[in-house]
Length: 102
Image (spheres, helix red, strand yellow):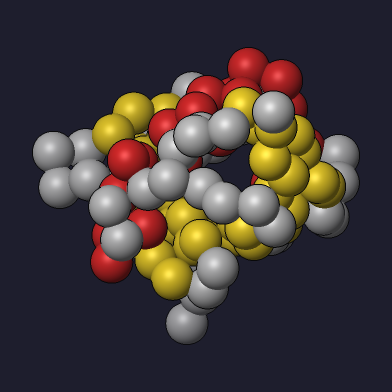
């Protein structure tokens, strides 16, 4: 069996992935780590790692580490079980790269 989740990237990630919204099929029991691995392998999510405090970081265009905010159904993964957060049918995943401005 599979479950379907909706992924919504924001800002430059839309160009990286080539979509504004996509429904993906994942294996039953998939967690956020599974989804992020698929996004990296199949859709071009920049190389990333998990920090000791449970945040995703990737190397930005200037070669500096940048945080990636991941929301599951509008809740930051840090408020859930981090990368071990189990996904459910029709879950909505939002991916926000860092934003600079002032």
